[in-house]
Image (cartoon, rainbow, N blue to C red; front, side):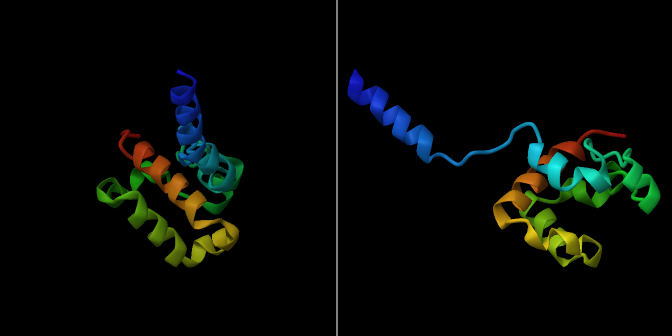
Length: 102
């Protein structure tokens, strides 16, 4: 029994840690896009950022495609210090956000 518990602990520790609640998105993208992607932050209003839900093309994109789009977009130059893993995690959250109609 101890061997099984030890194996589960080791496997659990080796598994990638993901933020299912969108913490990476809120911390890294939320200041400009709003915590829910609805562009309801003061910065979003000042920058006239439209809600992510308005970008219908995002609905058909994978998280990897969204992450690549962010990396290529000059408006997102501030994310150069975001790791690929964090960007992908945030993009995965975006795929969930854009499934919801505004």
